[in-house]
Length: 441
RNA sequence: CGGAGUAUAGCUCAGCCUGGUAGAGCGCCACGUUCGGGACGUGGAGGUCGUUGGUUCGAAUCCAGCUACUCCGACCA
Image 1: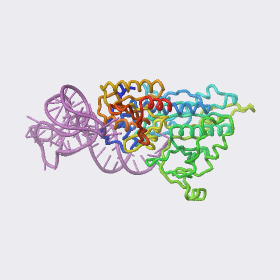
Image 2: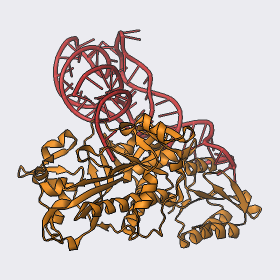
Image 3: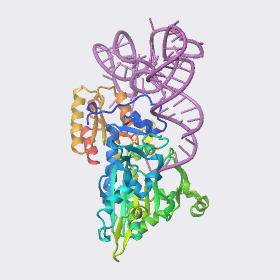
Image 4: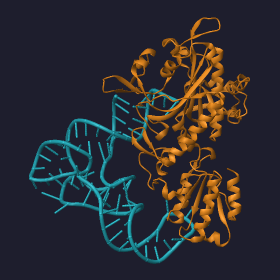
């Protein structure tokens, strides 16, 4: 992409509404623009990151055997009356009336709808297990939205729903999602720690929040330092094999959010030097809730014994739009954002320091073509801005690598590669630079 | 939802207290000089001062209502 043809309205002044660093950087870099309290327009740079994240989530869901679909944002109130939640959900639910005075709502979640869809066609245990998911916009009318996209009212979420004939099957679905989440977040360069979460009236131990540690996190969390070092299961995981042990290895160590924290237990279970107390951002939440909806909505499954019983269900959410904020919170410096390779909006920032200089222009054209052909997704700054401005903007948007081409370097036969995270620069010939950059894509 | 604020140019803000024909910086446009870490000069465009009403000879300024947004708290993927 040529920057001169892109739409990336960068701000020099920091908008006053932005309190936390990720929000400020997203506004400054022209990733989002606020349209109302907790409602954001995603500008092209932000949209690219959103897509990168959604694609990673999608790939990992598919790998774990979940099946993608898409449910609507607008739902009928009657569906929610079946589960009793139309009245229970309260003011957080955005209610809408259509022209025929029918009561509708902008979905805050989809348990009712997926239950309705599955009960219509799944009758036998032979059709299970089933994990269905979608990536869709949700709306929750938060009392006080804040922190930019981290706590908006409208947000993009991946929500998956599992259906099984018995609790053992549901636990297996839970374990699959648990492990898929570890891989998903690891691919984004994040260390997400699963922490025991409140299961509400259902009880049991099958609810975990996935927490990213960050100074600006919304809640206090406590965990064993060793959890931060555990490698994710990885793409070669045998999803049909024994998953229980892998999950157990994670859940054996202490990890809890403030609401679930038991300081005596923490002290007893975790040696002093491994006790971590930090702020955390919740980026995922998985939950087993049994027959809560299937019973109320009569989603019955006939078992091998010929008896009907309500499906055993779980739901599994990932805050896709929130993840952008979380990733920035965990990856930035004074100059701007620093994207992990996998979610960067572009792979390489190509800077032409002297547009109009024929040597610079032709070297950049060659680099742009080669990087594009290699799938490195370059963003080519071909604008007439001065070098200083170009450096600042490129640092701000935080692409992992920069290829800097200017008249002085070319006169000496060199171009410069800069690593955004380390700040290291290296001067080498254009060919060598292109070989290097095209290879590690 | 309780408390506290804010609303003036694309952005950040001043002007309001003490009413008298709307300002700065940045950004934008033109020209020139520049050009390896957010350059400089000259000229220019751009605002029914959130909205409705009131007070007044006269309201960005004083008063009231409304709306939106922000912050603190309680609540949350």
